[in-house]
Image 1 (cartoon, one colour):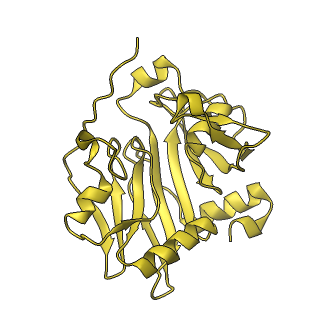
Image 2 (cartoon, helix red, strand yellow; image 1 turned 30 degrees about the vertical axis):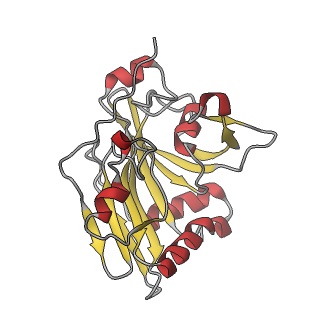
Amino acid sequence: MTMTFIYDPPQAPYLTLLHADEHIIVVNKPSGLLSVPGRVEAHQDSIAYRVSRVYPEAGIVHRLDMATSGVMVLSRSKAAHQHLSYQFASRITQKRYYARLYGTPTSHSGVINIPLSVDYPNRPKQKVDWKSGKEAVTCFRVIQQEAHGVLVELHPITGRSHQLRMHMRELGTPILGDRLYSPPASVEAVDKLQLHAQCLQFVHPLTAQKMMYSAPIPFSDYQPKSLEETYGYAKDLLGATDKLE
């Protein structure tokens, strides 16, 4: 039986600002809130909408899935938007996620390089596509044992739609609470997707200074190490530093 989707985004806190200046805005998006408005009126509430109520000129640079929580950066001018978009496209940004998995991977750490493409008959799902899919690369490391599985640290090298969710499923350990890619027992075990964009580093579009923002993991008490240290570990896993610099 197909369940009807009812959009009911969290209202408190309404908007968590991590930083704001004349050029950029950084927020912590909660799980359950869209990054941008949906097509129907009932789906207008989103990070883009909430930020626009304070900063009408704000523009979305990148997105997180509705069910994913964590750090996002928005622009406040066309020039800032272009500069930030270039950084994401050129892999200048550094991103770190944490997820609770349903089960335990057979390997403690590794690199997943599995191409993905849209599963058009089942959108928004993605699928593994070795023939014509886009490159998708993720570095992962098991952090600690937790209820139902383990906590993992994830450094996505590429930024494909549903990349982390698909790659964890391909490991045989889908992310807890993933309604698209995990079994019913995983969804029933928690109240929301256990995936969090914990840290984001980018270059300020005006000052050229490195900016780094983080948000606590809402489903774990783990205290992450420095981004420099964990990215160093990911570089070792990847074996090719040019992809991470």
